[in-house]
Length: 153
Image 1 (cartoon, rainbow, N blue to C red):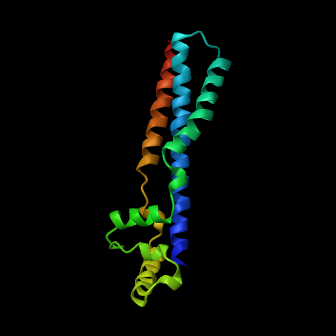
Image 2: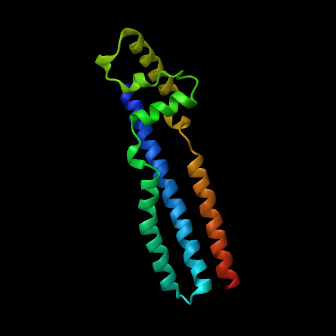
Image 3: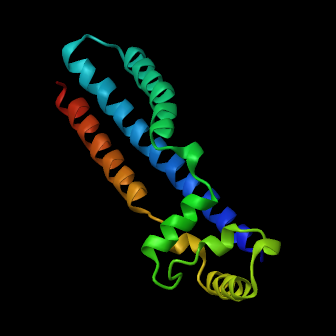
């Protein structure tokens, strides 16, 4: 496995986590906002659905833009690994460099890191807190929306 392949898998996984958190957050908030608007305005079920869909259509791309999805690259992953993973010991940039640009010491370190990531997949070390927060927000939004509907506010 090439070093850049290790980081490429990390990029895909990081971006998928951002997309998942965006979808969960915006779907939950869209439902909650449309139900809350029903308290103050006389909205039919169709109106609430349209409001929820509109929030989803605008909110998801906005969330992804704000989260810098397009700026996640190999350097982002390498920097994160350097800061958070002691096994990398600040050497993750050897995974970014091309094979012919490495000196013998860097090649050895790259092989060690590749072996480490073969045994311990990179996705295990990437942040999952935003996804957990998004699940929590989604569940709270659904519960609040259900309460609004059930109590008929």
